[in-house]
Image (tube, rainbow, N blue to C red; front, top):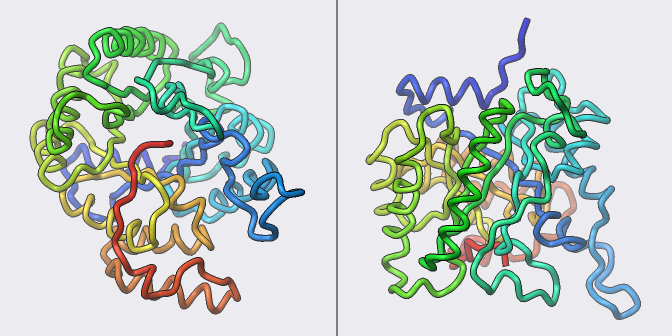
Length: 347
């Protein structure tokens, strides 16, 4: 009997017109090593420094252990990885076999996510770049037969950032065109991440949502079903822009990204608000990874989207669980209930 993963089940339900909050798709974005390098797993809670050099960060084995725990929990629908971690966890350890969770890999890494310490890349107009190849994401090596079942993943994230800079956006669209052609020929599915401009686009901030929406619809208008993304991953620019995009094309599944960690209330309120105004997917990376107890955090994200608990009650519940586990929270309950402005870029 063929396994039907929760992502495919929910996408089919959404395509059939379901508006049930229980069909909301949650992804854990564990691809931060393609952006931050060594700091990707987050700071270690055991020590503040290494010989005065810097904060002590978790290691790659620590990061992989966290990912294994999320896979074993079986609450999220997608785990997004770098190609190298996908090779280890999917191809070598086969952790996604017989799992309801769909593995995915970051298929390109534009320069606006190059957020290494001391780097200036993310402050300059985004440029297209691809570290991974589709062959290596699917099979771990160059392949001739792309109809064979993947040993890694047949789903990837493709990222574009429009900056209102003609030459840069032209190059990004050409690269996106080439990617779509290759993906279609190699039986590779993708979802499309579109960031807000990472540099001054030359218009007021209150026009960012409209610019993003128009850019998305314009770049997909010439794409037929065979080359379209499964869903979008975009910043939450407020209820107005989100509702405009969702209502324009009912066949376009819209998801939101998490941005920086912020408070626990920030995360729960964001996923609640986004689902309320039409988003059907959320991809949270730092919000999950930098939480004190990621598994409890994920459980509550699901309960919030299922409308079993309110965002404020979820924060209180989270702190109670931390206390039971003997984990010291980074903030007091009062501070963690505050809503703050969290950046939606990688840097």
